[in-house]
Length: 188
Image 1 (tube, rainbow, N blue to C red):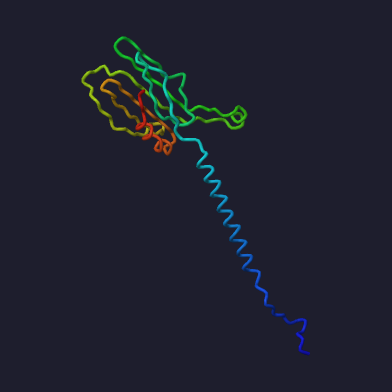
Image 2 (image 1 turned 30 degrees about the horizontal axis):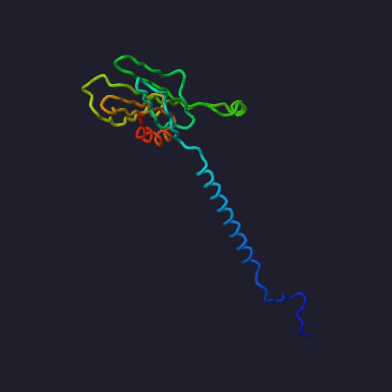
């Protein structure tokens, strides 16, 4: 009669299954965090650059070129710009705008709403001899159609001037790129 009754609980020395369950849950959570981190890193390192270098056609008798960063996906607009060359001076104006380069099927399924934005690049010879080497401060303002706009201009070598006018509807994108564009312009 020393045997336990069938209704009594039998004590054993086996460990509880709860620690294994917790370990599995912690391992699953660690794998999830690692996978999300890996996907984030893959996106960060493979995304296209926000700015790409653009080089103008040759301008003037000497063949100057403007090299400046522009937003990715922008191209020279056929309806704006041109060159003026004569015996005394030369100048060139370029208008750059966003362009839709997606495959046609995606364009049909998802129409492109271009951002109200443009960038105007001017370069030329300064005719006035009183103009000296200087660099104007960059000016920022909001336009009446809710675009953020700004310009930077100045003179290289005492005789070659430049002007960049830049407008974008996306204020955050404008703020990220404006200073880089103005500080990186080169004349080759």
